[in-house]
Image 1 (cartoon, rainbow, N blue to C red):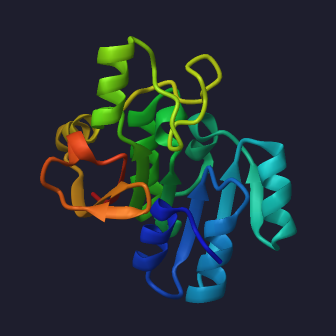
Image 2 (image 1 turned 135 degrees about the vertical axis):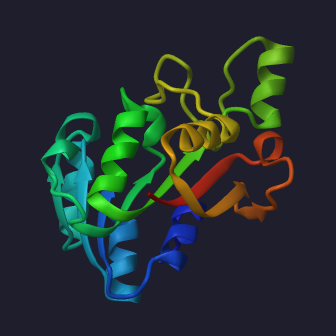
Length: 195
């Protein structure tokens, strides 16, 4: 199964046999890959009913729910990993969601689009408009993204919250890039975090 690049990074770094909660799991592709390739006990939370139906059709245990309101119901340390891929920027309270991730899971993976990447900056500078790209395919009025986070913004939030970064990966399209100038060059970021 071919995973989206940020999901492939996450899948490569989840320990076999772990318990995982995938928040914003979409169609369950990551959960299915983790189950099939790593023997992971994966559970999911998804807002979109079509995503829930697709994940359940894959044989995954998924409930419909909202990261902004429903994470408070999960017990502390219930999972080895809590995963939030391409969802942080769509939540109303990203800082609160991040706190819940690290309460529910012993570790958390967070991936997000980097809104400081040079193409986004150039689109705003030269065209005066929010970009529409392969990584950000919706127009500004149709996008679920309500917080335009950058890699440097996210690192600052982690410092403020006293959160430890165990790993960080930076992606441009399907390629990994180095950490040098990631805020300018990377289109997406993936972080592995712990308290």
